[in-house]
Amino acid sequence: MGNKGASRSWIVAIAAMCINLALGILYAWSVIKGGIPEHWGWSNADKALPYSVACFCFALAMIPAGRLQDRIGPRWVATMGGVFVGVGCIIAALAGSSLLGFIIGFGIFGGVGIGFGYASATPPAIKWFPPHKTGVVTGIVVAGFGLASVYIAPLGKYLLATVGISRAMLAFGIAFLAVVILLAQLLTDPPPGHIHVSSGTGKTAPAATVNLSWKEMLGTAQFYILWLIYFSGAAAGLTFISFCQDLGKKSLGELAFIAVAVLAVGNAGGRVIAGLISDKIGRQRTLLFFLVLQAFVVFVLYWVRAGSGWPLMLLLVALLGASYGSNLSLFPSAAKDYFGLKNFGVNYGVLFTAWGAAGLIMPWVNGRIKDTLGTNDLTFFIIIATLLVSAGLTFASTSVAKRNELQLVRAK
Image (tube, rainbow, N blue to C red; front, side, top):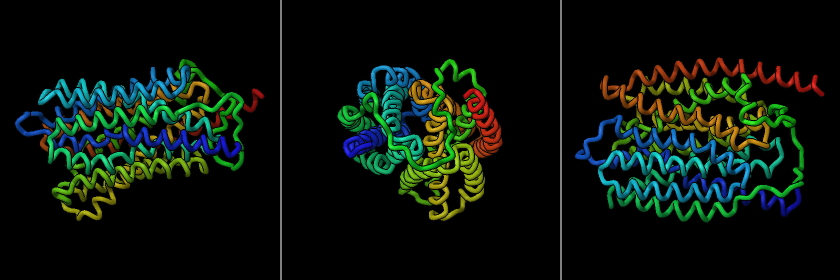
């Protein structure tokens, strides 16, 4: 790759990361919902609903958005994403106290917009780089999404305190509409015949000759194993993200929004670190490590959350964010490794439904558990159990990958 190609590749990667930096408003929902006035009369389950619907619509939109970007390129799809996100926040701003208005605006329009933008960010970036950099490039691009709360959390806190939730949502809508549309114009696929400089070694799956369609992918055992693992890892992170500010209140008081920002830093860091590690030791081993780490952190968090000081609480929140963020780096890379790059957009979109199902189900379940029992202790044990089961599934995934690799060798 010449200097010009190298320069262009990083322009695309940085633009993709910055788009995700805007789309990450989803992860600041625990701050936004804190600005919902008591007189609106929303229950805990109600407050989780716009976020849950946004997660679900985000995941559903990834499928048609991935298919579109595979066909027409990422620029126009990302532009549509910016329009949907901006309009969605504006609808929520105009909705007043209407729960339905927030569900339609933030949940449906916002979720679809995030899906279109997110689906268009990673594919062009990894196409510009050689295979042995798939993990780290993916990690850098998706780190923007996780890092968004670092600035959105304090900014949202300030806007909510000074102008209220409606005007805060209006400001976010206008800003993200402009920023995402402008950055989308920098997203391009490499030209035909683009050649990578291939060097370095790694443990990524040797599936370079595989290019499965989404229908063929659904016929593999690997897809369903990865889907279940993805659901588990995403469910844990998304649930805690939905009430992260509440976790920090006992230790940080009015500065509880700092916990959201710390989780975001961990989230972003976990994506980059997991990408780097997985390029060296493989996706499955990296997944196993982070799943076990996540289960351990949730267990410790359960026991210390009531009486811990703020340093320990923030450390646990950062580790939780890193463990969750690793999924958003590892699974796009795994989809590319095992199912190929040709149909990567739509294939990862289908796999991403695991994330959407997790976001739709678990935050709402957590809200219902708290409304019914007065505490969300049960949520901790459900999450720990699913994480440990998924850690076991990584061995099944490794076995399937080795069997498929052997079949490819024999076919040659």
